[in-house]
Amino acid sequence: MKKTAICDRLGIEYPIVQAPMAWITPAEFAAAVSNAGGLGTIGPMAGIKGPREAGDADVVGERLREQIRKARSLTSKPFSANVPVGRGGRAPISDRMVDVIIEEKPPVVIVVMGSPALYTKRLKAAGIFVMHAVGSVKHAQFAEAQGVDAVICEGYEGGGHLGGEELTTFVMTPQVADAVKIPVVAGGGIGDARGLVAALALGASAAYVGTRFMATIECPVHPNMKQAILDAIDTSTIAFGRKTGLSRCLKNEYTREHVALEAGGSSFEEMREYERSGTPSLQGRRRVPAALIDGNVVHGSAAMGAVAGLVKEVVSVADLIQSMVKGADEILKRLA
Image (spheres, rainbow, N blue to C red):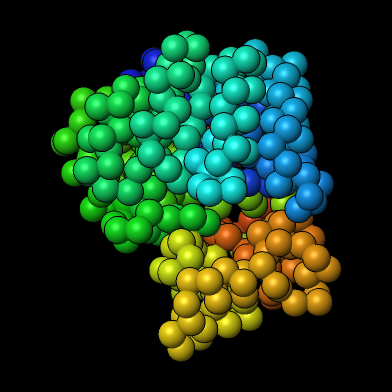
């Protein structure tokens, strides 16, 4: 496979970027992706053991420092750290994460869920390649104006947190590619060679892959989540939460209750309280780690993209990347 602009800029072999996935992408996993030729990414909560630690800016920052140093010891290839931009009481946590990243200087940072005006200039001044996730052409143009090095299109098909405009990968990517001069990465619904070729055809320089990486041997997500992905069909996920922040998860009791409450006219505050309260089966966990770490795929927030319906087996990270790259080459030859 020919190298793209992102490959050249980052020094990676293949145009595949592993999406950050909160609690389940620690240094070992990110290093495995990088060693296999892609760009591995450390998730923001890697190594965090519970809600108390997750709410402590200093603890989160030092755990991130540990993860960056560990990744550096496990791979000589480029890797990324992720910063979700916090709001309100979460802002000090993302501020601390950025401080640590500037001190430790991982090669790349992926910033999500917030404005590129907050951290881009500081990160760039530290010599770090900045990729910012966007959900529309306007957002991408603003990110470019703020100096980011590349933008990531987060399509509506993707898992976990989504942009509010509900634009699909197929629609958003070419429009963003036409509107900016910096490299574009396409994410949402990509999990095999066909998706990789499609991303490149739409004008992207790389594919942003999350859910498919969950179903790999090296990913430390709970086995129940891996099985849920393998069992998924085309209609197994749902995008929900327009009051609390749009996201896509496995359809389960949690999403059904959430949708019913929202349809019934519950306020934002009531919805947030529902999110925090949970059920006895969560044992005090927040809903995301309850699913990803504890394997509660009934009442937890089991984030996964619509691409889950394509996933039929658990493979190694290296085998997944090679299958995508070799399959893409075969498709391109056939099309030529």
